[in-house]
Image (cartoon, rainbow, N blue to C red; front, side, top):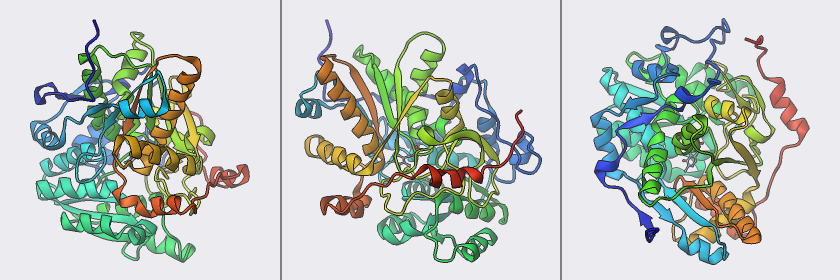
Length: 458
Ligand SMILES: *Cc1c(COP(=O)(O)O)cnc(C)c1O
């Protein structure tokens, strides 16, 4: 007898994961190591120490330990806003008239409005534990900066955020939330760093990019005593912290004997998707179960679907280590009409390897279709989704509609990473019928690929 499935599956505090799961431990083909851009040798613990916190470097380089304990202080912070609900989208199913069963894991129930707080508190905790004064970072749309400023405020750490200039101007309220939590926020590129001054000299009037803000934040960290740089996505450590999403999802599903067929997530740098799928991917890698995993990215920034699997710089200023990933080239900047986030040129090395090995699929979607899906979802499920999250909604709806055609009652799980209250300019454009799509041409992408560093096959 199958149990009646509630609208929301909540876990007890006692059912929350006490360890993060490191999917690398179960990967036969490990993600390629970060390389030192000067020597092209793998970055060692000592190489990384000026930039990152010690414990986080250990996590970054650990390809073998499957479970890593979550310190009590982080668990207690998690308890303020977790466990997050796994919602059965009964109303959306009804609206779509689909036999598919749709679930979403909702990560927007905290002030930062996204899943990013899961890693922000972990990174801030390790910085504090190491006796540091503060951390520097970049933020694009602002969710990561907000999450980090909340975590730093809680632990009494200084937080310096380089915010991509166009967001700084378009999202003044995000900026003020960060300042309310005590962070200092600088529009990037800025005159406060050497790399910022250089970028401004070469591209006066630029609106900035994530890659460029990363370069500035790294420089700021390495030029101040007692500071380190932290990053909100892409890195192995971030994906590790985000596995709380997938672990909770798995426990919730198992409580009701639900077995997903398809698991879907939006992919910017890959952290929420990686976090959501990791425990399920582990089962697939160990040959215990099979699932379909789908990464959804914007057609205007198509790292997986049109990028190259190659070593590249993680930032525009080329000060960071090289990572092997699906990339559009560190010089790639998505078209200015792109409103939906997920604008990073590269992708998590872990997900890149899994995708390369055929263990995961990827699709790209255009932004007007994404906002149509967001609107449809909001009107029946109530939650106003972030544009980023709406990429996953779009493909979840597409898959549910396929089930309608075939009559299959598949179980679809997707990650609803956050809320869209700070994205109302984008919604306004959509509502006014002024939103357009832009798909870069092959020639435009070729320009980005030409900037890829030449790295001998290892
Ligand atoms: C940052 C963000 C993303 C994309 O980042 P990933 O590292 O790919 O998860 C998706 N959704 C929301 C709401 C975000 O803030």
